Length: 357
Image (tube, rainbow, N blue to C red):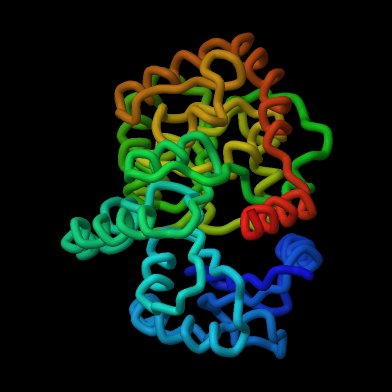
């Protein structure tokens, strides 16, 4: 008999789902009987497995304030064997619901980023409270699942040994086609939200320090966020392009047109974009923080540096000025990315084993 699992996530789904998510949840449905409580940009189209709401201007506060009540209601209806929470904050809401259903918390990154390095500056006033809530949820959960050695370390720092460690399924099929050679003209590519935790301000300063020393190189930014003003300023200064959003095929194309990916984050969980870049045969210049060192092997398939503008600038100048080294790093990148490929069925089987173990 399949276990019954209630997944809860501060995620926005639309129905019908894009093919990658459809593959994931179809595999999960073969392994367990499940329901999902999440946010949404559209109302559900009749899929009983997904409990979604229409997005509003108060989508965030509404989600968190109503979550314990919504979980209690779903527990009464569905009678799950376990609740799987996407982060310590969803786990805290599940614990607050007091349903007596075991809560499993997933650690995809540093939960403290939620208040300290993301979104409105007003969140920082709540940092000490939200940190305490997240730490307590990790300690009190029935089980803890890490996605990488880095997030396993975060659990231990909070006082809890992880019960399992396995990555999530990521639909990387479009990125696994044969990679193309590096472009003749160097292009530095950044893909990510324009938020403080991604260190977009540090990258902007680093580019200004480096650009006169690499006059044949350009910077391409992909992403949007609260620091979009930095992207606009860089574009006005020249030799910088900016796309707020790209679909998957265009992301593949952007990586193929780039010489390297730069990821100068101040905090990072398991950076999917790193694996995407590696699968396209592109080396990664990343900061030596969070989960980036789990993915990038310094001097083998990329370069790790401190998340400081001077260090980022110096590495950009060195790499762009040494095409042979760049090609050598690129040659090892794909094998590094392939090590993290997980099929939907493998992921679903790991979830079932975690719930039943």
